[in-house]
Image 1 (cartoon, one colour):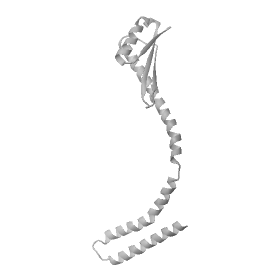
Image 2: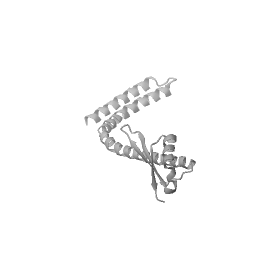
Image 3: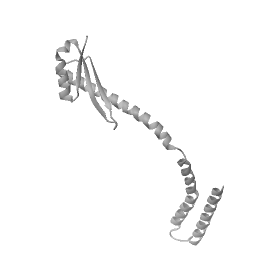
Image 4: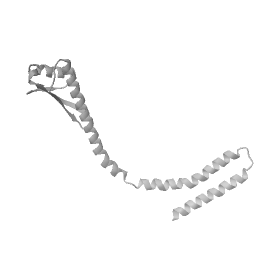
Length: 159
């Protein structure tokens, strides 16, 4: 209650000062400017203490608790999405490279890892070749390693 009393006294004192200044400068060329400045002064005397009350109320909310709970889960989920996207993109690139050499893969999987700095690194690509493409197994591994810089393991599957 003491805070409301102090606020009311401050606003009253500002209103008295504004009235006295307006009476003293009533017929000047800068009348509109002076009224604007005095009105702003009075308005700030009314609003600023309310802003302080809101600010202290907002400061009492434990924001760290909400940030700690929300960020790791959503950050981890986003990194997993990025990792899956990278794996799919690299698999498509390996497939495109093999098609340029006339090789059709049955399936291509890429294994990646996320290090402590949240960087995605390639581990290996696994190319599953149909038995008809078995003679090209070593060439496929070499092409992927040389052209894309990814270690490749080929597996022959029935079909």
